[in-house]
Length: 429
Ligand SMILES: NC(=O)N[C@@H](CC(=O)O)C(=O)O
Ligand SMILES: [Zn+2]
Ligand SMILES: [Zn+2]
Image (tube, rainbow, N blue to C red; front, side):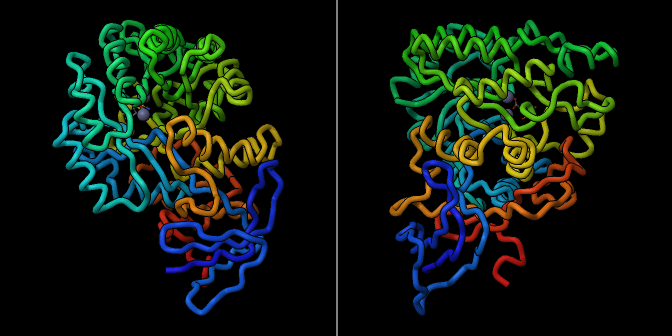
């Protein structure tokens, strides 16, 4: 029950690499120092020269269970998380049934308890069945173990309903997490209303479809005195609205996905449903604004929006196929390779965007390596270079636009609550 991680490197508060040994007893980190001498009852795990970081945290994923088990299950989705270095994930409630009452939430927790390889913090819906017609019982869902409230997959169309949800959540010290999409501005779009849409004659989703909801909601959050979080922010206008709201002292946070940071509409090589997600890949200027917003603190952290779908569903034409791409198993290597290696984002910043900051914003006691903390630890091999191969995924979803991309920075060992959640075969051979 005692594990000693030997000879790894951690990032100190200044972002410098420091050699360290870490002792784990049961589920806790009990000692961190330059040299810990192994005792008889320690299992020594040699991580010489590897990067040791807090277990990654992804507050926006889709596990599909219950009801969508052909796409993903709690078992496969949490294994995908572990393989990607994530030890805490928060799945969205657009499942069947939707966790919108005490019983479905308790059943969900029972399944998680039985199947999950990492910590799972499920969202409850905002409205019954995510229909936007009737609010759920917020206190009941909080008591049943909801992490926060979201109708992800659809926007909350009615302002009064959103306002009421925010007041209810605020009274319980809970967060409202919003998929921002104004239905009257979708226009049956399948991609961003821009150059790619025009060239290929595909209906487009304009940027205002997202930004008008954010503008509405930050004002509602101010009036309701609620922590309001923006999911998968994608446009420059949205970034501007969040920046202004923060300046005004409104309690708003935002996340951005790896794919919106890395790709834009110009990167879509042909009509291909693996580039179809909601919100869509926007313009080059939008992508630049997202990076700028992340670096100046307007956007708080990164979340994958891991959204697995079956090959069959993704084989439909661009207008019929579902929105969404997988992300858990590619996030860290992609972000490391495309931002840290190019010195656009420092290693410390990247790790904080995926650990410390989401935990701080949602008052979670994870995301840091320190004595006394739960032992959620990810070990990364920064040297190994490998192509992304969807056939290797633990996820059932293979829907990624990043197949074949060469990346470095692959997780090799993931420890969740002191247990090995995933390890590359060779780590301890
Ligand atoms: N992002 C997506 O494109 N799809 C998500 C829904 C969502 O996150 O809005 C899904 O559930 O498939
Ligand atoms: Zn969404
Ligand atoms: Zn989502």
